[in-house]
Length: 132
Image 1: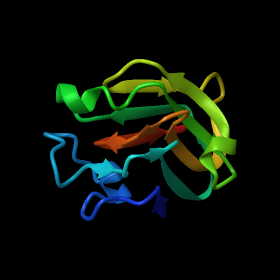
Image 2: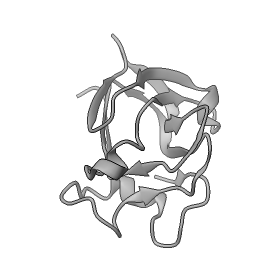
Image 3: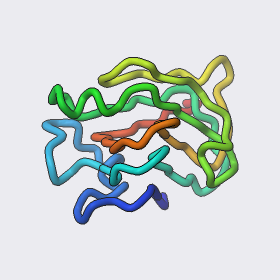
């Protein structure tokens, strides 16, 4: 599964968001972008996939917890995640179950993006669920 995001500091690559490690969520082992406008994380599926739910796990230290709020979870066929359908907008901080509506949303790209500000995007783990 190819992954992407804006420039990541050395050692904090996008791949850490899907490494299966949700315990501790300390460095290294966390996907972190540089502080840039509208930071995003993106995963590319081999073929369009229907997503019903996404679980987003972030770092739980108070300073880092507040960085992941007011973000969008998107699914679609455009590699530019801002152009894809938002499953949901998450206003709260912390770990979240994000539901993509009845019937889910189908696309080749799953994205997480903070819009409208410059910020670090820090992800401990991203899990996507489709039909069983």
